[in-house]
Each structure stands twice: as C-alpha cells, then as structure tokens.
Image (cartoon, rainbow over all chains, first blue to last red; front, side):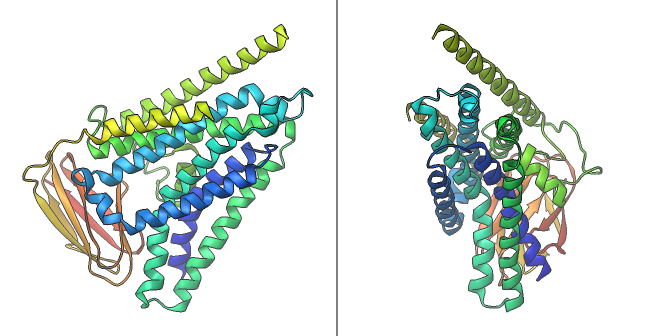
Length: 274
Length: 113
C-alpha cells in the first residue's frame, strides 16, 4: 500500500507543481479558471489516449516514437511559457493593479491564459500517461488488494493537495510581487522542460551532438529521490545532464530574459509616447 | 490569439521536421527482457556497447511495470501483457543500474560490452 501511495503521489506532484505555478501566474485574468480546467481535462484525455496507444506510439519511428512525442509536447510547453513571460513583462504591472489604465487586452488576458492552459495540458499529458497506466493496471488486473488501490488513490489525493499548497503559497505573496516571483519560477521551469526535450531528442537519435555527460551529481542528490524529483519538476534538475542539456538550459534562460527585457522596454516607450 | 498560434505552428513544423529524421533500422540486435511483478529477467542484461540495439521488454506479470534507468535516462511504462521496446543509439561500455519504477524493490544491471 505504501509503495502504491508513493508511486501515485510522485507522479501527481510532478505535474501538480507546474499547475500550481501556472495558476498563480494567471491571477487576475478573467476566465482563467475555465482555461486551466480545459487544460487539465485535455491533458487527462490525452494521457488516457497515450496510455491506450502506448505500444503503437513506442513502435513509431523505429522505436523513437515515445521520445519524439515527449520532445514535441515539451517544446510546445516551452514556447507557451516563453510567450507568457514576454507578455507578462509588458502587462504584469497592469494586472497587479499598479497602473489604473488597464487595456482591454489586459483585462481579459485570454491569449496568455490559453497559452498556459496548453502548458498545463502538456504537463499532465507527459506525467499522466504513466499514472493512468499504473492506476488502470491496478484496478483492471483485479489481483491487487483493496489496500493497494486505496494507497494509490490516497497518493493521488495527497499529491493534488500538496500541489494546491504550492499554489496557495504563491497566492499569499503580495500582489505587487507575485508576478515577479512566478516569472522567475517560469524561466527555470521552461529551461528545465527545454533541457528535458533536448534529452528526448538525443535519445531518439534526432540530435547526435553534445551527448557527453556534463557532470554526475548522483552521489549528492539522486534524481529519483523525492527531493530530486521535485527539483526535476521545478527547475529541471538531473544528476547526469548531457552537454546539450546544459547548453539548451542556459540558452532558454538567456532567450527568455532577453525577450522580457525587450518587451518591458517596449512598454516603457509606449507609455512615454502616450 | 494570433501570436500563440504562430508559436504553435512553428512548434508543429519543428516537430514534423524531427519526425522525418531518424534513420531506418536495418538489422538491429534485439535483446529481450522480461518483467514480471517486480522481477526483471534476466537480472544481468548483456548488451553490445557503442552500437545501436533494441531492448524488447515484455511485461508477463499481472501488474503494470516501468522499466527505468536514471543513468541511461530511459523509461518505459508497460501495462500487464504488453510488449514494447527502447532503441538505444550508443552506450559506453559499463554497468548501469536499472529498476522497475512501479515495484521499487526490484533491481537489475545492464552490462554493455
């Protein structure tokens, strides 16, 4: 029962942390609840589909199907996070209520809410397929006892509860600062997802350069420990990154910071000319 | 909606480009592994080093399994009765720990020579 609990718990927490950050980052946007719910439902439906067709997907592209699908899903999520942070560095202060004259675009903020809904969907799709397979296997096999099934469901519940704690923790940050914090978190989140995508492309053989390990910190913090998994979900920690992962990680951070600088400078110019 | 949809289009294009890329497999060596409710058979998996090969994993047990190696950065979840494979491009000679992530007590070693 404990085993089932732990497995379900950690699968949920990896996607849950991302959902928590996204919820906090879309604070003040009208209708964001609907968008996020759409992302969660879409992600779950996609995860179920992937679990159902797991074998077919794996066999596609000479056995690289799963890696390529994972990379594609992650790349979409990264692009949406980059878009969101760029948008927020222009409109974040208006959302935070510092500037009175909030334009229509800000009041609705639909594009960025939609972009982040896609991120939520992608996160759940990625982590959820394994969980669906695990839970379905437990229930369908009929060989596992009630206590194991209970353990797994309790793991899902506690994982979801802890994820919402991460949201409420962020939500408790004063409005003026909350978007600075979520933007910073999203930079590392995006860099982590981008470097994971890079590793999937290496595994698939799509990219064949820079595949040597950069370092090995398994002796300090194992990636498959709970702390390692949480850091993996939040900032993309991995105990044996490849050189390509390191390059992609830093590159993503640089691109995001540059775009955010450009976007907020653009905003200042507009304010001055008005 | 225009800008995110542009990003999405770019991502899809990148994805499609990537899809066409992987080279065709000719006669890949196939190494078979059986997983049964927390048992990994054989317990020492011998594979060729520095060459492409296919690890064909079959779940012959009654519970779902997940073949995983953090060192090799590969994982594959399998429902009961399912067979699936992981294609490895190249592995340095050495010993790598593998385990069943859904049965945490299980352990095996993959030896590349």
